[in-house]
Length: 94
Image 1 (cartoon, rainbow, N blue to C red):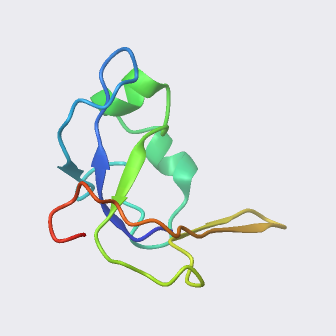
Image 2 (cartoon, helix red, strand yellow):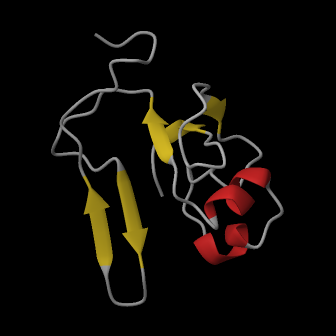
């Protein structure tokens, strides 16, 4: 699960295209807890280009460093990701 409402699409050289896309109705939507494997099987041009999910997620809300921005669960492990730097390129951020 992560709190990103957008992601950066990439070109065939894995360089961000310069656009910010919504995760809504895409395999990049992890706003709710879900199994990644199911979404990797979807047909989506960005999955094909990257060979999976290897994209930058854009977080629209400033959060405390002590609050995880993403959590990844496996059968015996929980990985929490924290960030202390807001995305300064997104509108509304400093």
